[in-house]
Image (cartoon, rainbow over all chains, first blue to last red):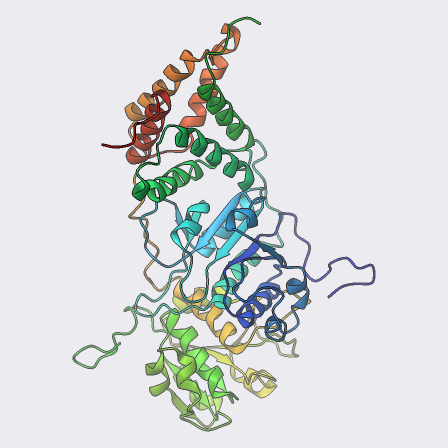
Length: 255
Length: 255
């Protein structure tokens, strides 16, 4: 997997940044290994783990990876999904459940097309094996990814969901895509988090999130509202400026 | 999975005949079960087995099928591949190996297109887990199906190869697509204008648009920023609420 000068030669060379695979609270090490194997089959190499249930590294992962051990060795662990995708502009939450969230829903095929059309880094986010992603996880993402599936029998396991996403992405991986260079990509997730945090801080000062029983739902609504625009770096900065202005006293004219 | 008159209602109704999945000399019952599960996820229901190593039925298959037991119960066993595909017009031998055979090589995507374009019945043929199809098996097929895969790491297992073929086929099969019924259309322009006006009023109070030479450009930037999200009626209303909260004094707790 590694050539003589130590560089990663495991995967074909692509021009667009490869999407990362994020596993949120994965349960079995075996399934993490299977996901790594699924990834490498289609040239994806970067895995991120959010608070894996049994800690990390996990001795059950390696045997299931069937040779994709390099992915496991280089997997990074994060405390939260927001941190795990902080450098990503396109975040896809994979889920089959209907939810009252107003986000675009795309297929793996559509997601792959979007990823190639945008210069930013993308993330496919997968939930725990049994329960899938929680509403708060989905709120972090810009889009929901759903595999169109037999409505009477939806039983994709984690590695299968991963392989379908990786497979669709790999179809375009050899092709140099034309980029829309006049359109800036969405700001990285950490800038978006900064904006959301700024809104929350100002609104907390005004008791917006009160009463407590509504606070969580209101925070989710606000997060989804601010995630939807896919504002770029400059736009996020402008909105931060708007908020800073609103929280200050009247700006003096003249120096 | 079965309705009152006993007919197969497990899968949606399609106009083109569904392809059959043929497993040639499969070794582990568990893998036969996993293949059944992979099939049913994407609406394929007919499995044929050519001389399974451990006989048939196999008690290890059921637990791995995760509910796709009907496929196993109805699986037919044949003595040879030729018999198993005797009623099929399109026969695809899945293999990753280069062989000295002069047959067309197609991807799962291309195979799916061919299957829909031809009225005959099709078969996807898979070899034993370890060794794959023998040359004599491949000779029975009209085409070779190869999944384009990372050249440095080709490690698809049987169920994964099955699921990719079934998935590609299902795209044309009219499976339930993810719906976006939760996604409301963008708010009418007058609501957007109301929001922009609200922002401008608050910002004017803080001299945001000063000095005068920058005012026009700043207004345009703000308008573009707020137009981009395509917020719907509810989202615009939420943002109006945010602004109202920010312009007010601290909201009193209590009734």
